[in-house]
Length: 504
Image 1 (spheres, helix red, strand yellow):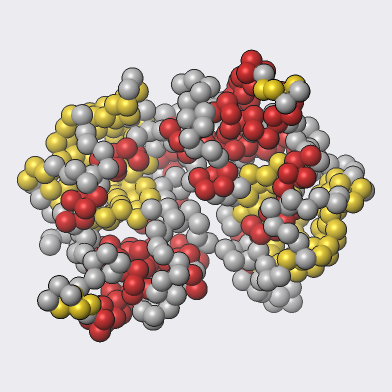
Image 2 (tube, rainbow, N blue to C red; image 1 turned 180 degrees about the horizontal axis):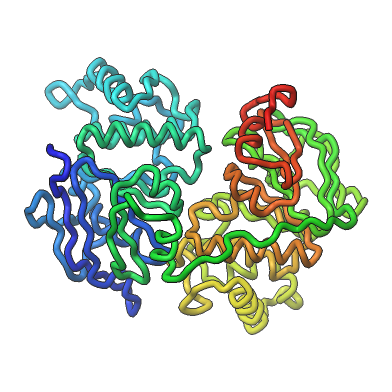
């Protein structure tokens, strides 16, 4: 198929949910061999548009043209038959199955409709993975693969049923800079094969690096479609937000007071070993590491969600005896989990109940919930975090990603937490929401609260943190003051580099 051939066109697509117009006459087109970015603030309508394209929703108005011909897509299976596949932020693979079994799960080719063609599936898996530049062995269990390798397996699965249109939803959100580079190499190979890619992201730098065109959505409306060539990052941010962004990060706090947290010899095999550090009043401490380095497990252990093998945690020079998360909450510790969908939020509950869950003891009397106090506490958090909602009882699953993340942080404001453990606090969140969350993190630390940010996004840690601990294979490899930190230096230690070989 020739590059530049218009494979897909969405004309005047509209979709409403009750009284909320999610999409209003949106236009979008996609050419063969093109990477077309779809960006906008959380709640702009990106996910709804892609759900219509993959048959999860039907549009109220509008036309979908595929190869110039109108089509109706009523299910995910129909979308697959038309060569359209979506790759979610988290690869939807069965961890206990092999690479080849995942690629052909549900579509196993069979002889006479009965006997699986095992040899063909292995050879075809090898061919697909070789084409993508990642020659994995087909029998490798998926759980043994890195996140980026799992994403490539998900791409191979999509290509196995001849997909010519791939929708990638925040594909690099869980990847290191190195792994993102490998993913971009795969995308370039797909482009040369004529595959068209819709690339949903909040990372403007990635748009500039890998995309050909970009469509901006805001409040369910099409704002503009532009060529990436010749466009600056500042222009892209202004188009996405509808305003200029004058400051991305607040000023770094650099005046430390008394010690709030002291950790000695904390160990949880095989995730981390002999962790020693301190956190002082008036500073934000960063913990940097690539996926698998032990940062998330350390965050969970500090909150009591992971049982530690040994080690001590002190709060204001008092050793804390807690062994589980509920005990940590009693000491006014708050934990923002990186997985807001699976572990952080109750999606079927309202905003008010999610916000007040950790602080129920503040709004209960004689074990009876005071609904008025609950709504008052929730409303205070909504106002303080500037969470965009229709009403307090609105189910969290209907909020944008940015608003969901604000609920994750806001729920620890209700019990007036003293220590905030934030694991990837802005992953998958638009730039506008990120800036607001960064400002709130800064305000908490400036007010004397303890804040520790765990992240594989080194730029975030450099912009926020007073000091940065770098983890490698479960151990602290380096401690850097913000004045000496650079992405190159952090990556050096995060990949096992020694202090002797580090060059400034």
